[in-house]
Length: 368
Ligand SMILES: *Cc1c(COP(=O)(O)O)cnc(C)c1O
Image (cartoon, rainbow, N blue to C red; front, side):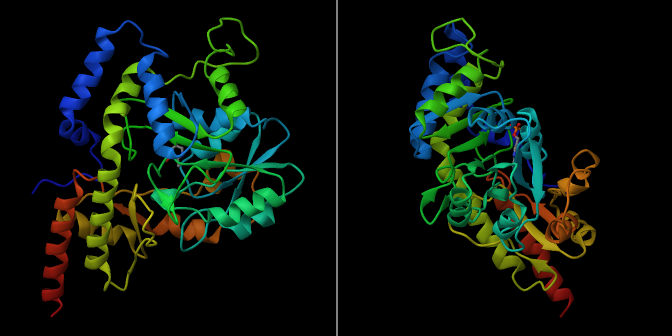
């Protein structure tokens, strides 16, 4: 039996091959490959989809965070609060703008940044908070927004795993000054390479971001008005994203349906703690907590499913980040040693769910 992979972005491109081919062909037939019509069209579509006035396409999700921090005026001598349980890009981006990441623990239920830990970590150097909507589940944004406002801090949402997710019906990425997205191939909305974007309602922030991504040039000029980078979303990626964006909501629904089936299947297993159940989650990952992760991964493998570990160890245990951190990270440590992600990508999940159902059923019979 062939193992079902944990992720397989090539299957999404195969599924929408015609749309993707046509999008790429239109770019090839044009004459502009950088900052042309496809980028402008995708930016407009994604701003509209996200419920924000502006979208600025950049080269990656990490750059989206780093450039947004810079555009928010954050730099050397300042600290940015980041959860310890996240992909390293969330914290590396803080260093790119010259500031220092201040890691805090996550909440045991949401697995997202713990608002109490955020409040405890705020000091005179704190300039911003980066909540990460981990695995597509919303952070407690009302509380984080209140904390940010009370302490006059910028709030930058890391939406790299939460394309299309909502909290009480409101799109994520609309609670802070800006939302930063990644379009890495395996994300809920992904392209054929690297890509990212920032959404915001702040026109000045959008203007600063457009300059930062392109050598400090003002629109239509080629004179540097300040520091700038080469961090542009390219035309091919933008065209692919424009073709896939109309499929995003349906794909997220497929992820939710698979998550509901996994829940049914695993609800009586005393060793499994299911992910939080929020109707607005988009299940970038379906990660369960298991006290014997290796044993569960082996059981899944025997059933024909591959799984993956996100994220081990917590950032406070990365030698590079750990040194400067104070405080304890008991929840991050526990989750980092117990979380296991099952296949949830729409092109894989239905088969994976069936195999798990079969295996659970046989196990139940075997146990009488
Ligand atoms: C993927 C990801 C990033 C980085 O995005 P890239 O496009 O790979 O640079 C940042 N934060 C989180 C939470 C991510 O999952």
